[in-house]
Length: 612
Image (cartoon, rainbow, N blue to C red; front, side):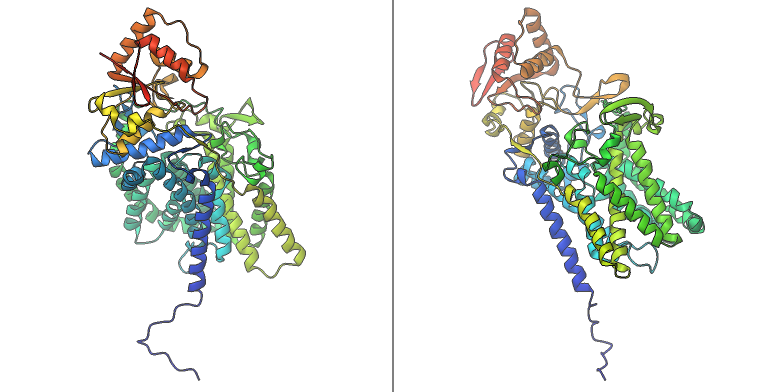
């Protein structure tokens, strides 16, 4: 007979604990490895490399990190700045300000610079999204005493890794620090589902309120979509015949908890929300055409560019740009997902069927909404109306891009894949042919979607005029330095210079124009950058086309008036200028600016015009 263990002796660890921890560590390692693989082109030189298809947003997020750190350490407003768009300033609350990231990573920004910090966050976003979904699938229990949603760690890992490295995530990894922060979604979903716990409505409401505030500051549009998806899922689930009594019993706790959430989030976000809806330099609705930025119906069955299928030439051009491949699941994965749903439905009890029905309807609703206001098929925009047309001008919806609603479908597919593998692993042994068929189906659907590295290019260095601090000899503290060409999304150098100066504690200089969303679009909507004045419009055309038009005295007078309006003290043209969408014609810019302002001075590696 085995000896009896003393009651005072510590309990032996569960035999399953060590393998589970190993599984957790393995999934984390795989997620990090995949994230480094996807971003490896930037790791070759964070300060010298840029994302090929979206160096504009990369420069913007680097600037936001630098400005956020500067605002934190200099007690400045993190949500409104006069350093851009002088003299009017920019309302960062209506832009993607990523305030939480900027504050949390401020020490790192000062230590290694904005480009490297940007890359660190981008890489961690991808890995954390995959791991957060894995953790949710393997740990969340639908009820007291219930088994985890997914019992087998391999199944949870498959679902989590798909959510973290799905085509939409890889597409947005082209510089979108907001949309790659997908790790927020499973945490929010978890907290929403925990709201049903009796007696814990205050605690749960507080936690969710803080999460909502954090998510709003990082990805407000993503938070909006997550809230909509939770609402649709819970409504469908609660209306299932077998769940109505359970839903009625949980409703009081939900309402109390959501009330606390609203109070907490409202208090934390009161100033950002005031700036967003009532503050200076606000606007209502983006300037992007919802017909163009809607998901092509054919895109759901297409393959993404940065994937194994894309390398084999099976990608398409159905997205408005390479950063907006929000679905692109490929036909094999769509077929596999339907097969998984059918298999799960047949083996499920009434309670599990309520969950499957809610998942399927949520995916269907967001699929249809992602098609936008009219049908778009293989790039052809028709006049056939769709349900989103009813929402196109509704506040908040008019500030979102309908194509991105397809991103909600990604975790639904990931959950169904995980549930299917879990079901197949837990069922009686399958006949060899059926097991082979399922294995082949998963391989055919997922292998073509395996991600490849982001495309990167070498970008022009920040001039020594900035890095050496020589600019301080020509610009007063907080004065206006006007880079030529004037800073826009496609000409981001001015903000890169500013980010360098702020992150290296050189001081402040303001710039005219900039890459931001501000007022001035049609019907009160927003636009990228300010409304152009005569001088920046002229120099933009020269930078893009390389043609210097005849410069008249009227042009010179307009240039002087524009520079006075901006309060510019100097105008600066670097030897190398980055164009995000086209090569910049430097010599033509030098000639045009000289004809407008007279001969420049040579200072370090820039041409400088000092204004009286």
